[in-house]
Structures are given as C-alpha cells and as structure tokens.
Length: 427
Image (cartoon, rainbow, N blue to C red; front, side, top):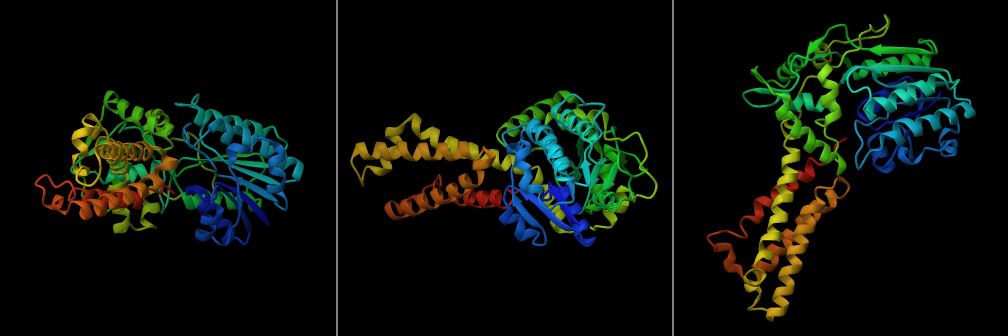
C-alpha cells in the first residue's frame, strides 16, 4: 500500500509515518528540504514540495503517481512570513482533492481540528473548515480526524508551550488557567489513521479524538511539571490586559517568520479551551494525559528544552539589540569612534572603516530577527566577532587590558550566539 503523507516532518505527521511504516505501508512524504528529512527518516521516500505553491490541480499529478491513499497532517497556526494559510490549508488542499479523485485515490484521511467555537472565523480554523467541507463534497472516500491537544514524546507548538510553562521557577504564570483542555496521544492519532487505512473506519467518518478525562490548563501544566521532575508551584493568573502585548509581539514575530505558540490565534482558541464536545468512538485507543506522559519518561534533555524554549525569543532579541546598538552608537560620533584606526590609516579611511563596520553590525542585528535569515545572520555574527578580535589583537593588543573590556565582552557574545544557533531549529 503506497501512502502519501503531507506534513510527514511535523509533530503529528512523523508519528503517523512511523506507524504506517510499522504497518508495512510504503510511505512518501513531502518536504521543503527532502535531503535533511531523508537523513532523519530514511525509510520514507521524500519529494521536494512547497504547499504554498501547489494550488493548481496539475501540480499534484506527478506527486500522486503510484499512490493509493493520502494522509494530510500538514497545517499552520497563523499567517506570517513563513505561512500562508489560505494557500496551504485551503487552496492547495482543494486542488489535491480534485487531483486525488482524478488519480483514483482510494482514501483521503484529513487530520483537521474542531472548527467551531472560539476562533472559528480566524484563518486557522476557517481554512481547515473550508478544506473539510470541500473534501466531504469531493466524491472521494474520506475520513476526517479531529484531535484535541496532541501530546507526545516530541513537542511542538502548544505541547512545547505546556512544557515551557511547567518549567517556570517558583510560580506558574497562566492565562486562561481554568480553561478546559482535552488531550490525545500522538500515538493514538497515528493509530486512528492506521485504522482508517485498514478500513476499520467507515468512509465518510468524522471523528473526534480525545481521552475521556478533561483537564484545566492549570492542572495540565502541573501534570507536565511533575513529569519534568519539578516540585509543585502556585498558579498566578495573568490578566488578558498583560497577555495582550505578548500576543502582539508574537504576532509581529510571525510576520518575520517565527512560529510562536503565543500568537493571538492560540490565545483566542484557548480562551474557550480545547474540547471536542463529543466522544471518541469505542475501539480507538485513548490514553489519558498521565498515561501518555508516563509512557515517555522525561530526561534532563526535556528539562533543558522546557527552560530554553521561552528563552529563545529573548536570546534572539537580545543579540539583535546588542548588534544594532553596537552599530548605531558609534555612528552618533563617528570621528571619535574612528580614533582607534588613526595610527594605522589616514583619517578618511578610518572614517570609512568605522561607518562600514557600523553598517555591518546593524545589518546583522536586523537580519537575525527575520527567521529565514537568522541562521546566516548568527554565523555572520560569529565570523565578524572573530574578525574584530583578531584585528584588534593584532593592531591594538592593549585593548584586552582596557578597564571597560571592549574585547573581553565579545567572548560572552560569542557564546550566546553559539547558544542561539544550537536552539534555532523548531522541528
């Protein structure tokens, strides 16, 4: 059985792919970077693709060749520099459905979400709902699965945020702490896909996936805190007026390509909670949150991840501010800043070199804020910092003994840049 999986590199999609491979299926995945995906999951046949550019039926013909079934686990939370929800979650999916019908695909499994309630009119749920409606009307055999908050060994988005909140020292700052939250194990979502593929779920099924229990956000965060091995801590309710600027900053970061789970869409959905309001059919596994976490005991790497997750944004912002200011401040008095170069070159050349280095610093400080440029900007910071150290050491070694430590201060900046590179990847 040949199965095409959209989103096979993602949190849910990778669990689905592993299950279908274990079932003996031949799996094909789509990826923007298939070479990297192939290293991580060599058993999958990878095809280079960008859903945002696949909104025409014709673009899917070659991708569907030889495939029997399709599983769509691709998705994004909010529009931004890296995501176009209308293109990827609606237009590309409708084009795929039409192409799948022409190609004779025998089953289309759509991993969607509850699309009513709070946030129903936001692009995240509106585009998913449009794709679901189109699938039901497409004439294709289909199964729609609607998981609640997905928990698993890995973490991304909301699950990553749960772990980060759980690791806060002394107290747990929570917005919508009493909101109800239902969960489902990633392995149970994969099992439901496997059941659909095997024919155990009837075509036309529209199934909610959630464990029977219902947590509050506070109790779920406390459960994760215990899983991380941390003592219990009191909950501090964060009023919406304080949380709103955080969401605004997260939305701004989204326009620069960063996918923060603190964006306004997530906050709007969480205001009502994550609940399905209908039971999962009997016969499908439904591990509780405690059982899911117990099946995947945490290690020190999980605690590191949780603590570093929310530090990532301040680290990137701090590096950006450092480099922007290091370029801007000398420009306020370029002649004075260029005095270090005067023993080695004419005044005009010293002025030109000062302005050039300031512009380089400011360019790196701005570029690191743009997600597609961040890695190259961080590498540029390392190269430029080492060049500054080497040049200053050769031309004016006495700066190492300067009371203000202009060269010594570069060393912790180098370490922070290396740390930013280490935690840059999101999936």
